[in-house]
Amino acid sequence: MTTPPSTATAPGELAGRREWTAFVVLLLPLLLVSMDVSVLFFAIPSIDRDLAPSATQQLWIFDVYGFALSGLLITMGSLGDRIGRRKLLMIGAFAFSAASVGAAYATGPEMLIAARALLGIGGATLMPSTMGLVRNMFRDERQRSRAVGIWSGAMAGGIALGSVLSGVMLEHFWWGSVFLINVPAMVLLLVLVPVLVPEFRDPAPGRFDFPSVPLSMGSVLPVVYGVKESAAHGMDARNGLIILAGLAIGWVFVRRQRGRSDAMISRELFRARGFAAGIGLNALASFAMMGSAFFTTQYLQSVLGMGTMEASLWSLAPSLAVGAAAPAATAVAQRTERSHVVCAGFVIAAAGFGILALSGTDSLWLLLVGSAVMSSGIVTVMALVSDLALSTSPPEKASSAASLLETGQEFGGAMGMALLGAVATAVYTAEMPDSAPDVARRTLPGALSTGDGSLISVGREAFVHSMQFASVVGSLILLAGAVLALTQLRRAALSRPSGVR
Image: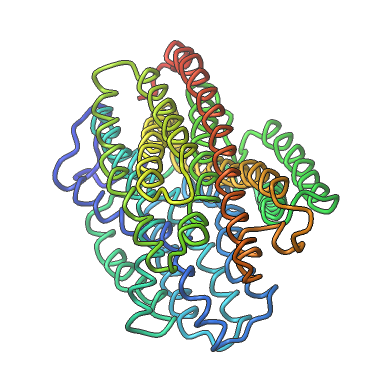
């Protein structure tokens, strides 16, 4: 690796004030990337008035960011290992700033979609770069665990903060302001990163495997798209074929990676059992986090009748517990066996789902407590298994390892929304009367749109029952995750490769 001698930390060496200051700077892109997932929640009505996008264009304004981000994570992780993580971070920060300005001053829906796509490309460079740099700056196991814990808490909090911050900005400014808030932070990043953050790269990366770029995108994007479409509109032949196409391309991609010495995904990463276990358990945690969001946000707005701003402010409340959970979990894990703490995290999250299953049609505090308990358990799992996957990967492959973690998280989140959303939708539809209009039988917002008081009351009861049922399913899946964590992480502890810190 190439590092400035004054800032590099040798294996086991404690990071000092310079590294921790650099870490705070690296939290800026993390917060912004996670915030941009939810920043449009309030802005869409204003965008509709000014740009008049079609229904299809509105969907792409929302979704193209996540698609570009998830499709390019693997590519950007491999690129960062080759050209340098700090260099890629700087390029991504510049692209993110330029795209933010383009989005803010978009004159039509096509321009806004293009800017959102560029934001996703920039985000794909930022996330694996920041986590890869954290892996290299903190070589002491205890310090790295604490840094990853803070990193995980900030990422989870950023998603909740994005919707609230966008609502506050829109109270005083036009819709483009929700994008311009990215620019000062990115300019600060561009100024401070060259001063504080050392450069790291793989000293012998081999040639960049260009044909694997479209293969990696072709394996990720169709699956994520198909799963999300199935969650929103139900599984049909079209969505099934899209998912199968992605899986087929993924099989070709994996075959190519296994047969090349300069593969985009190094085989070294999977020599330690802890790496694969970390990716799988992290994806399962994301499954629960995003799956619960499918119905908790609807509950606040459609069952309790809150406005969007009020609902987002209440949904921010559980983040206070999340912010403390990850650092606390890493501190506990340093004093006891990691597998026990991860197992406990899954059990706590399952208990949170259990609390959600007790909710009625007027149970705001029960919902908030359940969400806080569940999110705290999930972030505990994410922090510890992310640290495990990074610590068992070779330092020169840290960005590639981080990109696989993030890609698995994208898959897990999409599957959570699809599966728990499908369970909730099936229960809701079954409980609605056959005489109800189709629009009311499909979704609760559809029932609300009819204006029929008795039908709305039935719809709210049906939705709550569907949430309760989906919560029980989620709780059972997380308990299975607890068993997996206990068994897989114990085996991973026994198979940790020599020379990997």
